[in-house]
Length: 274
Image 1 (cartoon, rainbow, N blue to C red):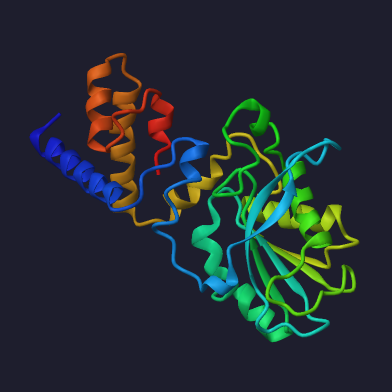
Image 2: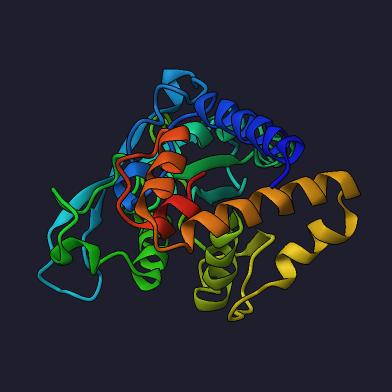
């Protein structure tokens, strides 16, 4: 490798390290995505929450206990007959998305239609924990079935805080489910599975068609991004892959240390750092 190439790669790696240290720590495991977000999340007025709904741990178990599922709600514009817009925050702690009850397209729609906005935290993320740990006993309840049933239970049973009257039950009250990416899947599936209580769904970028090894996702970047940027990214990826696929542990340890990830044992975890 020439000196110029070494300098280029070193500079580029240092730049990436700087970016990594400028953001919150990467999420290596599920539990890493449930803590540490509150400190970085924008603050929403306390009157909008958080509130807690007593949710069933396992909807397929008639003897199941309950847990506290966190949510935020804005009913400032509500008038009888207005819709309720329900947004599931998806696979992350919902603190950072709590502001959607006042600052989002959903809030604009609720204001226009005299409706209500609810941001619901997905089970097993943030404070919405079905159990005290991540043992199989509780992780086995982290299913799409239970996530959908959680939302259906909210629609059927929630009492809106700070509202001096009960809203009419669905379908008298029109419930509109929003979501993006995986959360968009949930929105689409809610409309399909519960048409009696879900009036409409607005799924954004919802990957409802599953594909194995969806390499086309990255082709758009290679095709449309600036050529010099694509080449730089490819150079770094090839450099990192050369180290990670080698049988020598010391270069791997040194590389992980540069990104503050020296504690990671598995190389695939390091490759997934965000």
